[in-house]
Amino acid sequence: MVEMTFYGGVGEVGGNMFLLRDRDTRVILDFGMNYATRRNFYSWPALQPRDERGLLDFGLIPNLTGVYQYEESEPSIDAVFLTHSHGDHSGYVSLIKRSIPVYCGETTSLIMKALDATGRRTFEKDLRGIEWRTFRTGERLEIDGVVILPVHVDHSVPGAYGFIIHTSEGTIVYTGDFRTHGTKPMLTEDFVRRAAEESPEAVICEGTNIMQARVSSEKDVEVELDSVVASTPKIVLASFGHNDIDRLRTFYNVAKKNDRYLVISLKQAYLLRELQKDQRLDVPDVTGDRFIILDEEKRKNRWEREEIQKYGNTKTIAEISRIQDKIIYIMSQFDLNDLVEIRPEAGSVYIYSSSEPFTEEGEIDFERLKNWLACYGLPLYQIHASGHVMPHQLAEVIRRVKPKKLVPVHTEYPETFKKYFGKNVNVELPTKNQTMKLI
Ligand SMILES: [Zn+2]
Ligand SMILES: [Zn+2]
Image (cartoon, rainbow, N blue to C red; front, side, top):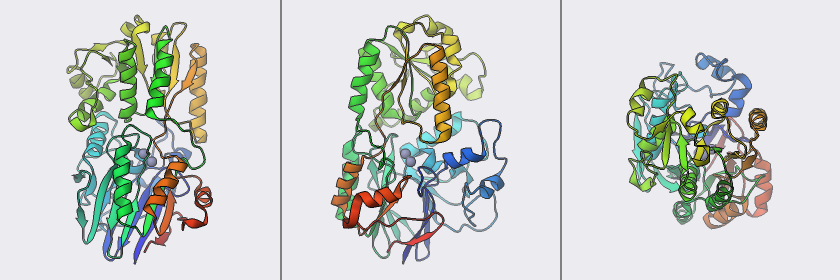
C-alpha cells in the first residue's frame, strides 16, 4: 500500500507538506509555511514566535516525531524533497533535523541560500547546517527503493520541478506549482509528456486558479508594461515577486526599450548575481549599465557593506529623485517609505505586478498601499500573468496524463475542482492531517 498524509496545502493555497509512505520508506514532499494561517497568530515585526511551541499549538506545523531539529529522537523520515523555493513549499525547512537530507533543484538551493545570507535570521529562517542534495531535471534519485524523478516545469520562479515517483506498487505524480503560459512552456511540456508515459496511478495536482482565472502571458505583460512606461513622463514605480526572474527580465526589456534604468535593492542584486552563475537561466547582468543598485546610507550590515563594493552602478534615493524621467524603480510593499524621499513628480505611476490579494490581511495591505499611492498622486496599474496553470489548460494536461486518481491540493476550492472535472475523472479530495491510500 502507498499512502500519503496531507499536513498542509489542503483546501488552501499555502503550506504544502505531504508525507509519502511506501513500505518502510518515508519521504516528505515540500515543507511549506502557511502564511495565511500564520498571520492569524503573528504579525511582523512585533509579534513573532519565540520557538516551535507556538507553531505547534496553533497547528502551523504538524506534530511529528523524528523530523524537527528541536527534538532528540532518531529521524523518522528518509528525505525531504522540495519542488521549488517559494515559501509555501519550502518555508519551514529551517526546522528540519540536520541529519535528514533535503533534495531540491540546484537553482532552488541557490535562491534559498541567497535569501538566507541576506535576510534576518530567526529560528524559522536559518538554513545553516542543512544537508542539501541538489538535482537537475531527469535525474533518477533512489530513496530506499522509491525512485523519484524530478522534471522541470515553468513557474513564476526559476528552478521549479514536478516529481514522477516510482513506488513499489506503481507511479504517482506530484505537480508542484506550474503553468503552461509562462516564458518556458516547453519545460512543462517535458513534465506532462513524461508523466503521461507512466500512466500514473495518482496525480497530486495544484489547482490555484480553478475559481479565478485571468488569461495573460508574460508576453502580454511586456506589451502592456511597455505601453504604460512609454507614455509616462516621470518615475515608474513597480513591485513584483522577489524571485520572479521572468518578470524581472520583462521589466529589464521594457527599461531597455524606453531608455530607462532599472533601480533594484542590494538584496535583489545579490540574488541576481548568485543566479547569474547558472547560465541556463539567462539572468540580466546587474553590474551592467541598465541597472542602478540602490545605495541606502543607513542600516548597512556586514553583507551589505561587502556587497555594495561589487557594483560601480549605485545611486542614493536623493540622486534617483533628480532623474525621475529615466527610472523604473522596483520596490516591495515594505519600501513605501521610499516614496517620502523620492517625492514622485506629477505624471508618475505605480505598477502592481503580482497576483491580487486573496486573504483579508493581503487586502488590508493592498488598501494601505492605495492610501500611500493616492497621497502621492500615483495611479495604480495591475499588470500581471499568473504563475499557475489556467483551468482549461489543466484539463488538457489531465486529459493527456489520464491518472487513475486525481488529488487536488494548493487550492481553496477543491470541491469546485472536483465538479469541474466531472465524472470522467476520479477526483479524490484530501483532508488535512489525514492519510489517503494512493495505491
Ligand atoms: Zn510557487
Ligand atoms: Zn505554491
